[in-house]
Image 1: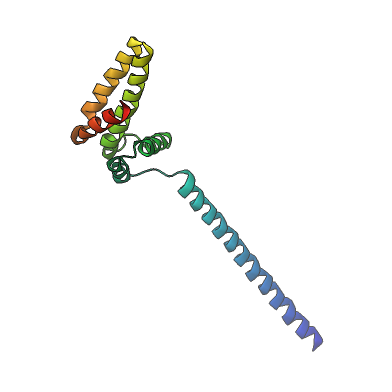
Image 2: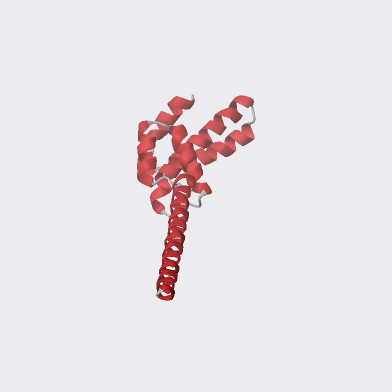
Length: 141
């Protein structure tokens, strides 16, 4: 009798260790999945066009500039997604005008002229958001 009981315990312990091993591997997989999702959420964030437009409408141009630079670093360009053309153009106008003002005040007219051309190009790309150029002009001057 004792030999039979020993075999039952041995088979039960094998199944127990097998089940614990499978559950442990499943738990490790879920932890890795959770970490990759959190990592992607916080470090690979890209702002949607609607969010960029909301930020621009709030008048938070610095935050919009940061979000556009982050998007471009992540590979989200206006060539790949046409929805980004307008908000990116506003931010490009902001950046070009700020450099234009800096070079104009420092007396470097060649660089100022180059950034004036970039301003004009961005202004044309702004489309229906061209009214923001007046707001940006008021802020930077």
